[in-house]
Length: 109
Length: 117
Image (tube, rainbow over all chains, first blue to last red; front, top):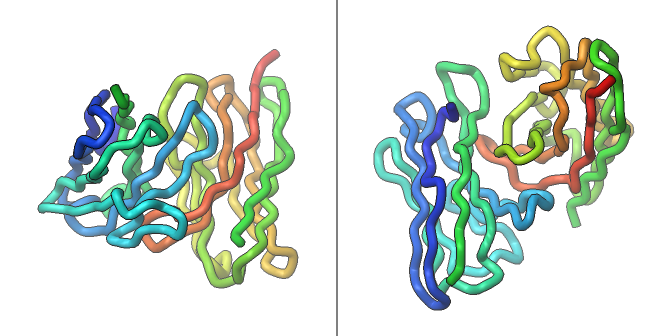
């Protein structure tokens, strides 16, 4: 049971906009910035967003937002190379630990 | 550019020990906290441990507390994870990652640790 809840799977077609969600509580997402990580075919994770920052080399079709205790990663103009597992994480004050979501498998149809 | 290169993985028997290393380059290592994150076969990412930039503070996941120790050598830009009393459920790919406040911004390539008799 992960501390953060993500959809198990999401799908979209090329060019579509998709949004992945990550739900926590006040002790984690409600209080701290969230990181989003892309993992393709169980390779090393790559950070696609941390807080509101887009890392160097990540296309600007990736964006992130947060409302209360739910964070969202939006991919505008979905591309075949975006097919991957996506994880969210942040610090949890009550656990004194970083927590991850269970991951969302994004399929590009 | 930022590079994180892990080493020290392998096969170890239950109850055994292993020390992982992560060599960092491309940034001022002594100014950033560092993490270890693992992924069991077919499972999601699991945070393992964090160490503050100066080594003064460490945090651990409950599943490894008392068995694993995270440390760092800022003079050699190297992060470590000493793993003792290893169990089958510790079998995973272990990644080191650079801290970005409450997130991670760079990751190593990962290395496999297998605990098996």
